[in-house]
Length: 116
View (tube, rainbow, N blue to C red):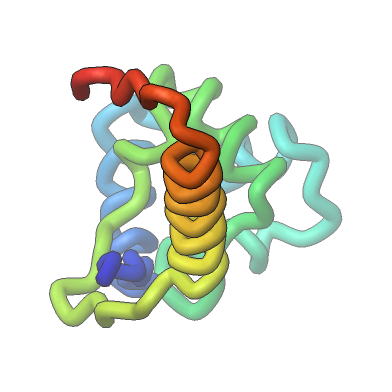
């Protein structure tokens, strides 16, 4: 099982606003830097109604001198999910390896198993 991370949109918005206020960066400056048509986009982020696009998140992180991951606030209630693709790939590798071992054994060849 792997934990699927979920973003706290409201918490992230508050955090973005706080980081901008620390640096005396106004919503208008963000709008101009990102080339946004409407100032409402920035207010929507700060109020936790929406999140910036990935491109805007990246540009904003550079503007604030932070890593993108530092701007994101995770939700406490992440959910566990089974990563099916990864599990299937691992199963295929294990079956191929087992097949190799069985084939070598039936041919009477010694098999050198690498230490892990």
